[in-house]
Length: 254
Length: 231
Image (spheres, rainbow over the protein chains, first blue to last red):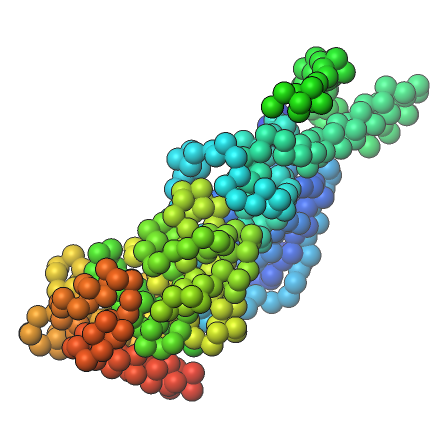
């Protein structure tokens, strides 16, 4: 029987989750995060061994607890993950390593991201499929403009920015911004419930629902950060309302 | 049939061997040297596009030249966008369509070299009679062993007349010596396999023998009687 102990650290725009999995027998485990999306630890730009988009699969021994850590833009949830035993651990492995394991252990030979100039236009095929922005690597600060920080992706890790996307300033911002808006709405829901309490019992219930008074403090700190960001957004919003590109006139001129 | 041609260091003639072996075996040559591509290139989708998920491996194969080639791009952005782990599936896709594939692997000990070895059922290590090249060949032999790809042959390029028994013993595979020759250089300049330029030359005969030996090893490998590389 595997049991889970956990601890949260507020890292501003992300929640860092520390997990300790203990078991009285050697067993395989499957850990599913209740905080989504999961930003796993990375080795050579891809998720470390055992990590996937939902959590982690691995094994724990009776002698040594399994210690794991990951991040998520979501607010803390108690418990942060559920752990399920998946049966006895298979000893050793047969066959060759997978390509993924080789890349993780030996590293990519490609140039570092900063060494690659950003082209001013897609080199070929402007109609390449536009894929999602890297939800695992971009925190809420990545406002969706595909810049040099946007990692290209392998098909297996669910991210994906093509050169074409990097090259176009009009890449759709929604995939990067949406998780932040979703999290903001959840925070506002929780804050409004806390603000609406009228009796001591309701207050205690509302605080417990959020995860304790420490969680309320974290929520307040996050809302402060949200206000700062939204102030900036409001300035953009006014300009967005006011601006108008004389497209038809420009089309006639060029 | 999937064969990987590899080397511990660059400049030993790996691409020349891969190209000529592909010609002898009537195979598709896949230029998997992602950062230092050297096989003939052409417009259109290349291996960078395939490994970035923008093109299928089969549509990127060019059949027009003397050897069918899956070329590799030359741009830094292309290398950056390519996922080296996707090479194995790409090579298998070409094998399903064309039957025979020779992978021109990158030199070195990074994952791109290891994944190219993993993509082959057997490997040919190319080296030269110099200290640096031989040390590189030994390292590559170890990498092939770690990946589980058997070593079919060692090619000693620009070989002298000395005996190659010690090299064969050190690397754990028979040695095919290809002497330095003008016709090989001429074929390289013309972008042709040596058998098209100088059919009866020693170099051409050595590549024919090499292809025949590699085919035998791969047959044994598929029937399960081949040991893993080296002692």
